[in-house]
Length: 362
Image 1 (cartoon, rainbow, N blue to C red):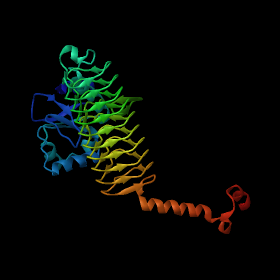
Image 2 (cartoon, rainbow, N blue to C red):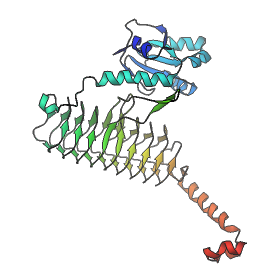
Image 3 (cartoon, rainbow, N blue to C red):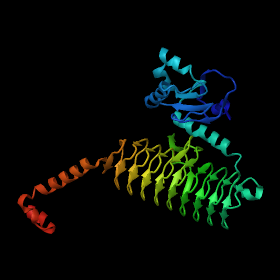
Image 4 (cartoon, one colour):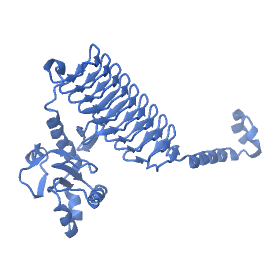
């Protein structure tokens, strides 16, 4: 728990305008799609406010949630209807800059959630780690405090498993895999060499000439029968976990950023990059070296062509390619049209060898 007084200590602009309780304690920070009891959400503009209203329309209970507004935005919306909405929350408050508050407040919770973990002494020596006797753990493996390793797990040399992570039955970690704190891995998974799961997401807020880090503590949840290639990185969620669904297969050199949620049976080919908060439906196939922009949604059973640049949502069963990505037949037709246009000025001279075309046209 972090007190509201600590919020005030790290951001002097923090002001509480209304509160139903006087204990002044906050359990965690929340995203708008995942509320937690005694958590806090941030609203800085109309985009996030609309998402909040959508949650209320779905009947989500917010009586135990606090909300922090950008002070200038709250003045824009302040009125009779908004007062009724705000009174549903545990408390509401304002700050001058939500970006600044997000950075400095997240550090408070990062420290709170990680203060009990001990990654300086192997948990097997302190007795805090639990390793099933049927599991194989090679030499030069580090296991942090509170780690749980189930039956018939194989962990090769050089692996590091940090505090409070769990490894399911029959999972294999190949050499030099790093499992960061608060990662939950299911049964029958395979993680190939030099992959990192659960590192901080790449998230910063620019404020007065500095890039302020947003501290992540959401962890990663990996379902059963997931295989992850070598040299792949999967970042933990900011406040709620990054999720990899059951049976998904991820190739080598793939990056999956914070807050991404992959459904069941997803295929991600090599050198693909998913930016933050991408949602991928069940049984999606993503071709090699594709790139997906932040906050987009890919529908169930969709297909993304190799080297595609996906900048908007893809519908269920959609087949997209190109840059920017669009329906594959549209992209192929436009590519063919551009080629015809580029050659049309030569007219009947299309058969002229390439080395002579520009000379002939002069």
